[in-house]
Length: 219
Image 1 (cartoon, rainbow, N blue to C red):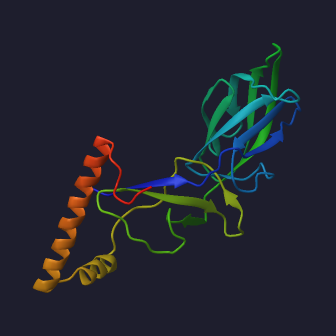
Image 2 (image 1 turned 60 degrees about the horizontal axis):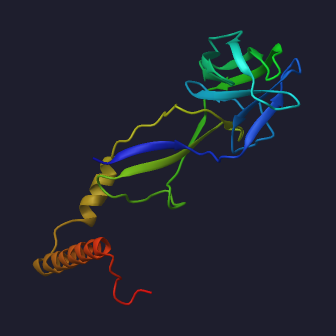
Image 3 (image 1 turned 45 degrees about the vertical axis):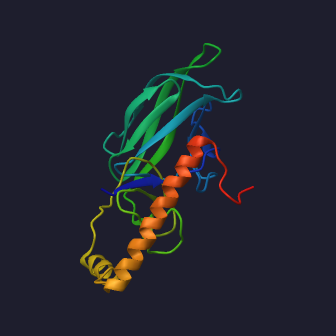
C-alpha cells in the first residue's frame, strides 16, 4: 500500500530567537522562514519546541516549571531539560512563563509572548518536482512537503498537525485507466519482453555486487 507522509519544510541550523520579557533567558525554536521574526503564530493543533538558554552565555537552562496564562490558546504539553513544548489550542495570544536554573546555579524566571492562529493557506508540494502533479510508484512511501500560511503571506509554524486527507479523486482514476487502457497483443508482448530483460539485468547486477565484480565497461 502506498503511504503518504507529510513532512514539515525545515532546515537545520536556523533558529528564531528573542530575549525574554525579564531579560534573563533567550527563547528560540528551529525555523526556516523569517527567522528574524520570532513571533510567528503557531498553528492551532500544532506543536512547537521552545528552547530556553541563559542570556549572555547562551548555555541551556534546566527548566523547573513552564506554563501559559491562557491554556485555551496555547498550552504547555510538557518540558524537559531546556525545552518546553507548547501546543496551539485556539486563535489568540498567550504568555509563556518559565522558571529554571542556570549553569551557574541561579534560579531565574522569564516569559515570552506567543501567538496561535488557524492556518488560512496550506501549501503542499512534491519532493522531486515543482509541478502541481506527479506520479508515484505503488507500494512506496511518499513524502509530501507542506507549509502553513495566512492569506497576508505570514508564515504559520509548528509540527504534528496534518489537515489534509489522501483520497484518489475519480478524475485521477479515470486518467490512470485511460493511460493504462487495453493494449494490443503485440504491445503486450513487447512490454513483457522489456520487463523480463530488466529483471534479468537486476538479478545479474546484484549477483555481481555480491561477488565483488565490476560491471562490464564501468570504470
